[in-house]
Image 1 (cartoon, rainbow, N blue to C red):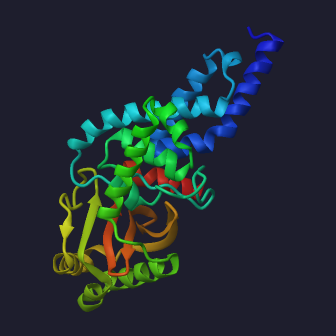
Image 2: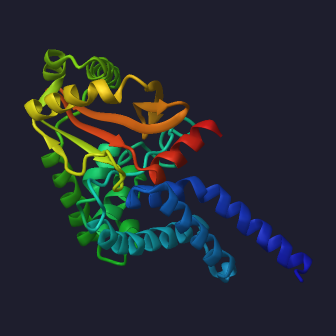
Length: 298
C-alpha cells in the first residue's frame, strides 16, 4: 500500500515521464524504424523509471533518454538478425506525423521513410548517434555520455552516418514539387501510361514492396526506369480498378493510402530528387499498415 509520500513521488515520476514521452518515442522510433517496437521500449523505460531511486537523478529527461536509447540499440541489434530472414524488402513502419510534424524532435531530421530505410544499413550505434545529434540536437559530449563512448568517437559515428546518407541520396526536391511528382506518378500508374511514368521516374529508380511475405507482393526490388515503368504498366489493369485512394501524411511527407472495400491494402510513398522519383515504397505488410491506419482514425 502506497503512503502519501509514495503517491506524490509516483505522481511526479509520471509527470516527468509523460513530459519526456514524445522525445523518447521519437528517438526509439528513429533507431528502430518501428512504432510498435518503439512503444515496447517506452513501456520498458517506464518500468525502469518506476523502479529507480529517483532521488539520486538530477536530470530526469537525460536519464530517461539514456535508458531509451540504450534499450533501442539493444533491440535494434537483435532486430537486425530477424530482418535478415525477412521475406522480401524491409521498409520502416510508417507513422502519422500530422499531430506532431517532428515526432518529438528539435527538427524533423531522420524521419522520412527513405531516410529511415537508409539508416537501417548502418549499425545501431551509428544510427543512434546520428539521431541524437541531427534530430534532437544533442551536443557531442551528451551523445558520448548516452552511448558510453568518447566524444571523438561520437563525432566519427555521426560523420559516417552523414556520409552514408549523402552517398545514397541526392538532394531532395521541395515539398510542393514532391507532391506534384507523386500526383503525376499516381495518375500514370493507375492508367498505365508508360510515357508519363518514364518521364517522372529517375533513371536509377527502385521500387520496393514490403509485404512481409504476403501473397502477391513482389519479393525483390524492381530496379531501373525501364523495368519499373513496364512493371507498373503490367499490373495496373488488375491492381487499380477496385482501389480507392486517399491522400494522407506519413513521416512528414504526402503519401497515398490505397484501399479496397474500405480495407487498407497499401501505403504508397516516394522519394524524389531533381532527376525525378528515385524510390517508390509500397508498405503492404498488414502488421505495419494497420497500426498506421488506426492512428489516422483515432
